[in-house]
Amino acid sequence: MKILYLVRHAKSSWKYSGLDDFERPLNKRGRKNAPFMGGVLKKRGALPDLVLSSPATRAAMTARIIAAGVNYPLEDIIYTESMYGTGERGMIAIIKQMDDEISKLMLVGHNPGMTSLANAMGNDPVSNIPTSGIYCVHLEIPSWEMIRDRCGKTEFFEYPKKYAS
Image 1 (tube, rainbow, N blue to C red):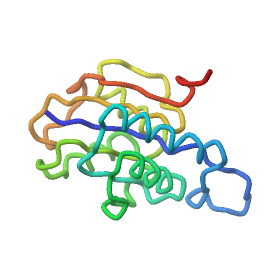
Image 2: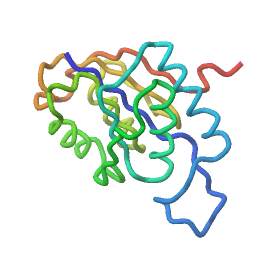
Image 3: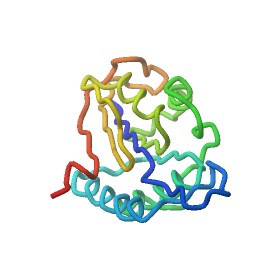
Image 4: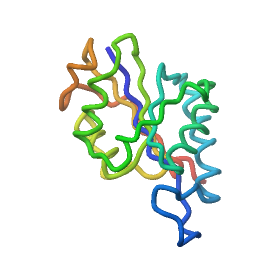
């Protein structure tokens, strides 16, 4: 069995109009929510074997913050150009290439691809993975090459507003 964590990057800033989309950093809310969600994952005992992230600034920042929150080595994060701007099928192609020694894979990326992938894999559909949202699915497959639609069961869906008081 494999575990897949789908993490949508934290809230990004539109403050600097001259920045390219790829370069947008996290805003204040994103810098607050990402470590909070890292703590939520830590309490759940979530520790990925591998973290793959889009290299876009907002995703890379989120990946580092979440990784630090679960004590994943920051130097082991892999930034994959193909995760920026890809959709569900592109992410599935990336997943299929994973070494089967990896049991727990975390992808940090963008919508609409993250939500589409969550809905393709899990049994509990979501309308949207919000910024800093994390969707975890247990995949009933022995090998990443065997990933296919509806091969998993939703383990949890966490997001910051779930904890707002």
